[in-house]
Image (cartoon, rainbow, N blue to C red; front, top):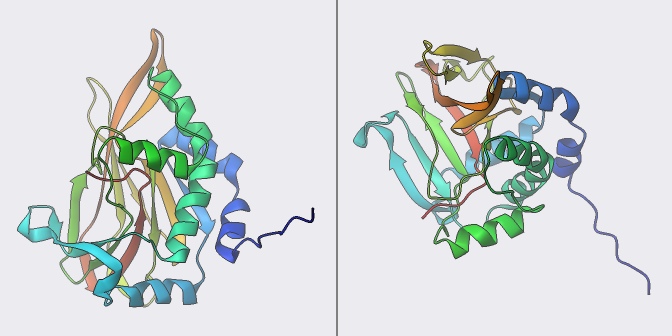
Length: 242
């Protein structure tokens, strides 16, 4: 029987062609890593234009109403737009190995090989709401340091892709991470992204090797104050929410 070949999307091919060995090394050493360009400018613009289409989203959050910062974001509903679904599935396939290494070091359960299998586990646990989101910031907007935890099941890595062009669309608005080790002061990292580039980072914990085995460090992330213009970002989180 002749098999039908399914052509990969350009986005999936771009994900697969990323320098994953370097990314894995950065994640191990720093708890975050930047990709090469994943989205083209026209794809970024198409995603930004989706923000005005309420039918694509399940919920909108105004950050200042909850003490999260100043700005807004919307969670996509199922079914996800094709480009968001492609990103979520293909990046999961690249990250599940290091996620399992981290969970093994922290003596936690392994993750399934595919996102569909992991999503089924989330749904069985009552986490049925999709978590990929579009974030929008305007002047004076910012996002307080936080962790994206939505239930008992948490995939330890997530992704933020900058959709706006920092060269012409906005100023300020750097991606910020903090690392807190036991009995130490917090370490801060500031990440400047290009349009279409992603930062992959730990959701909450990352294992580190010590003299007495592995311990966990705590990580949080946020966005610094927008000085001018508009900043849009796509967040790709792999666990669903309750």
